[in-house]
Length: 366
Image 1 (tube, rainbow, N blue to C red):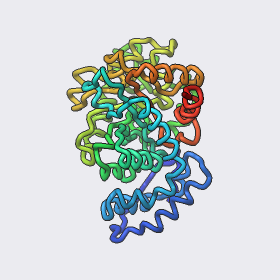
Image 2: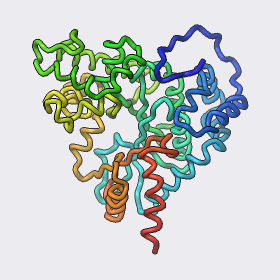
Image 3: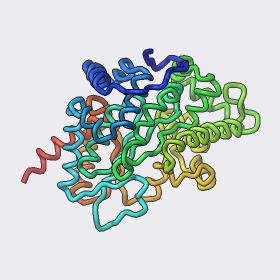
Image 4: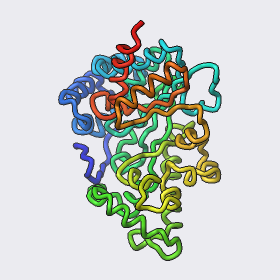
């Protein structure tokens, strides 16, 4: 069976895996990386392959499995290690994002986190391997239950439960509004959702119906209060399920997907107060009451708001601005939040993190 982003997935009962074949999996994983495209892993590996890999971690232990996978990880790991060593040479220590309240202002800390989507899992394991070998720690926000694809990828995401928390901290990557629309409005038909969400105007048109909290109905069916209740229920259901595998999940990070990028304060087509209510990167959605109800310590966006001394360097479109700003903070020994989408070592905006190593090394030679 082949995974496609726009497909609705159905699975059948399979016999349990008794003896996982690690050699076979290593060879298949090697083929999955040959073309170097972001979705290759999903195209080459079926659910049974992921179940076998999970069983390998369980039977042989993470050290042995990761050692066997290391040749496949070489390109990713060299780039990631170069980034980590740059901060290390600057006197930085790594800390998990959920340790932000314990930060020692006298010492610079790097709070590195990774948003792990279904196609990032293999690359994220390579990063976790570096953390384990070199004593780093970073936070992996798993896209658990976000979309129909992610619902099917519970076994691959669950592999991270075999890794030590002292190096690999787990959080949830979530977009409650988008998940609610995908599952409640489109009934899990992601092909239909993606077609609808391709046009920004479609999303704005529906959200604007909620300006009137009493009579306005999104998709002509749901009031604002019903939408908010549905978002919370979807999120709570995913958290309860995720905590069966990761009991200590207490931190959440907003997903900037098609819907998340539209329903934001910066979109002047939408009323700010409405965006704040529905956008899970806002402090209004993740307010104190809702955080307590969901047993969450905090949302990442709230951490940034409450800790002005922490410098956030996420994805930015201006590469020169990104380089100069980050270099300035390293020189000033400021605490830094840094995002890294694992599979984007090969492409995309977060490639900046890798290019930054060359830039910084060249411009700060003794």
